[in-house]
Image (tube, rainbow, N blue to C red):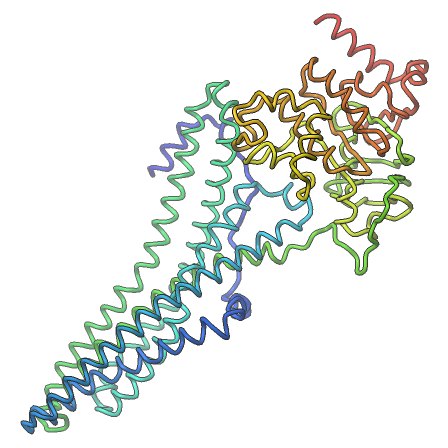
Length: 611
């Protein structure tokens, strides 16, 4: 039984079911030359600088390497030594030394410039991919784990490094070298050349058969690496939950299993790759045997001289070197194609929420929001909203309440156009949001979530994220207005305190206060609070309630809340159930109706009384 199997047999099946990630499959396509051409388009920006300089030094180096064996074998042995011409011998030795020196300099710049070229291209591809992913719709991220996306942007682009750093330039060098060697070999002795190369057709036939298996094995490696990254990302973010339920052993066992799977897939891919070089060496050995056996016969018959034989041996040894490198390049190319297929799969993704040509730019936003007969489904199977009609007038504060899954957050998502309605219309200031530019729409809206995201960096930088051009005084003023200044000043470095990844040094309530300050600094015309006060303690809630009055003033505001105490003062409260609005009115009106809102309110206050 495999090592991987032993590990997985130790894992509870229920634990295995817990670790589920978006499934990636190998892309089954024939070798796509158009895709290779598309990949090579990333060399275009360097076609006037690094690329031609690299090609020039490669040509110099290649020509010198082709010339030296001919000088040593033919000119030195057959002309200088055989004719005992000392002056010619000295001149040829000086010439060979000078050529080696030039080749050394050319090789230095080849390595330097090709590595610069490769790193620049990888930078461009990674930047292009990350920029493209930034613009994709929410459904793209709903269906993929952060780890799998990370693998595409980092690992897959990294897999192209060898191809662009040395592979493409070496391909040019090796092709010139091969053509040059073959021409020289035929000029030296056609019969001997045909004899030593008779094995080549068999070698190319076998390597062609290996291609599909090698390519598929590298795709499998990339897929399992994606799963490993997904699990690692989830495990680190959820470490407190893991420790609180004492699931460390199961977590480690699963990680060990998937890590072993990664190792096994990598070994299999290396096993397939490793078949090529021994094949080349075997061909080299056979060619050398033929050279010695048949070459000696030609010398004995007087068809060639010793100098020709020595030059031929030099060139034959050089011939297998580019063949071997081409084999390595072939493997690099297969790895690169496996990675590029995955990269282009993302680059070919188009946002389902896309801008029309010449979209409307929202200016002087008033915040008038309308939903007209809106229906929506996330997966075209289960309807999240059914026939929603509502109107929010400029400066009005409305609240959305209801049980989990009733559609509250979906309404907020449609206002920000994170998704498009299945049918119906969402209007802002009379404009269909589908006709409005996404930048002007979302820059008019601030959203504060229950699970606010704090970036690594300082508190000052996190609050300024709402408006990057804000001054320090404006950031501090926003924090003071929201009531966050009192705890910030107690931190070791105040506003310059590093909060670490996801704000780990801050409490949940403190992180929420920072998110409020961030939203206030952005000064939006439309404010959405999605369970924004759910994680705040009673003392902080008092501060928030005072700050909210300032925050909501003059803005169109949508408050989504389970804590009904935070929405009493709303102009209108909409009660949702299974995607429908079943009640609407202010707090007093809904309490008088004694409907669903009344039940939710009384049940919540009874629970508080019990506590």
